[in-house]
Length: 282
Image (cartoon, rainbow, N blue to C red; front, side, top):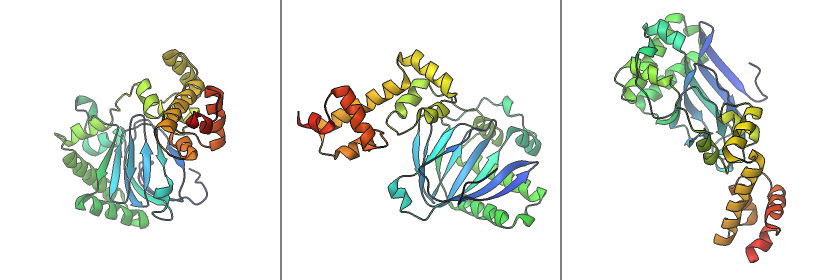
């Protein structure tokens, strides 16, 4: 995988699949975690702070936390406050796959009906998990130590730790639930992310749709094009904020998801036939 400038990556593979990864990168505005079929992951934050945006969730992470994620699209994001925490972000990831689970445990995860009520879950890193993270980082920094038996042992240790921490009835039940993504309603995804400054392409990615399929489904559900509907809702929320508080117009524009004041002013005037400042005074 070709890395962007400033990104550094260390990986350990098992049977040609990445199972452990340390990734360092400079601060960013938004980066997509690409959907990979039949991949679940657990990510420790080693350095820095950032947020994760999914279909129906938004969580803040720092070096005392981690995230357990089923296979789905989501975004890593940072704000100005988080960028003050450090000079970049470093994370350590553990990746799991059904084929690997079958080999390690001889489990058939399709035999369990156990489920989790989440696709992403923030995990507070306790002493056991912190020591586990340190051991994985040692292997990533010294890959000559990571022979096949060591990798298998560390993967089994992780699954034992997580099945206990998530109070799953068994390791089989934990793993089975991890590979059952919860379906999120299309409208829920749109409404949850309506006031984020997401592009249509990014919204489509959250919905696991191509941009053309996303536009067709949006028109079918809302009877309006996504661009027109989203701009209208953002402007309507901004209008309410203009009347209800003394926030600066530029702050309101960013709060409702416009990426520039000029774009906000233009769209607001098109809909209300007045500038934001004129509307506030009227």
